[in-house]
Image (cartoon, rainbow, N blue to C red):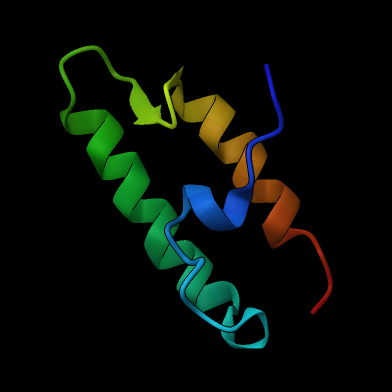
Length: 68
């Protein structure tokens, strides 16, 4: 699988990187998880990929774990 940009995955590309904090990340992550839970096949579609909940969490954790 190709690199998945966590900022794009979370839909935060319009924000200044310095304004992205843990609260913003957690809200966007919950939105993605809700989309996955409500989908018929438990997948999240992003840029032509079908991602599982664990794949999205792994990508988001890359952003969440970086020190700001």
